[in-house]
Length: 277
Image (tube, rainbow, N blue to C red; front, side, top):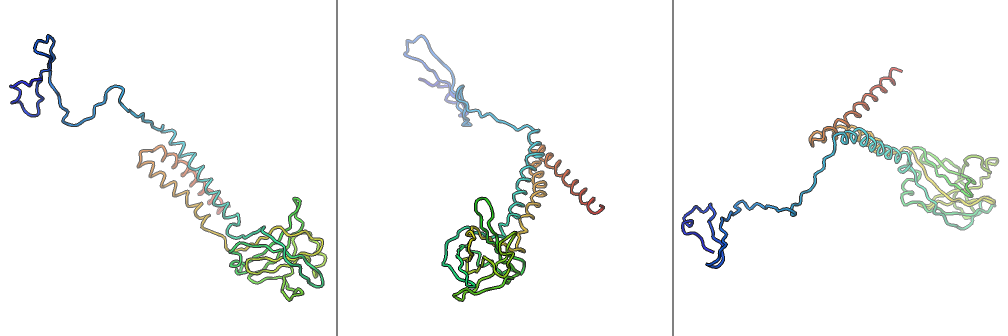
């Protein structure tokens, strides 16, 4: 391989000429120049190109997402938040964890005692609110309520107390519905007492055992969740429209604004009819 002498004086940016050949007596010779890639570019050859197919979402798809899908998702989220608020999650404590206790004698009558172990926060909530509360004891057998008794009050317990043969105080329960001792209010068949997180229930003769205890109180409902359920709608309308425009997804913004304007007009019309009517 020989380099022409006259090409040694060429500029360094101009590729040199080279002679490629075999032995001196060879009949076939190949001559040409070498082009150097000074920009270090990667040039792919056939079969070696990794070309990814790019996909774009049609404008009408973005419009339907903003018009139908987003308000549908918001409706589901709002419904869940309202359902959690109304479920009693923040105003009820219940337990079905019941065990047998020692029998007691009240007014010369023997009662079987059952002990409910309530959740750890029961002792902090029991009879501490100035609003109404009640503690319900239920007996549920064979798909029917056998009996349902309760004690209640406003801070203090409203029911009368009685002492057993050991000098322990019990509350005389009241009844829900058609209960046996409604005909003899001076001789109830269910007594209740509280000791920290334990609810003791004394049940008279011929009464099935209790199966469920639930403590309910008013005035402690959570107003944050309903507020969030309403707040996410205007936030989504404003934020979604801005995001759609800034990311060049204007059909999405148009879809959100369409149902947003309709919703605001509906609220305005309802409010107007409410005050006028």
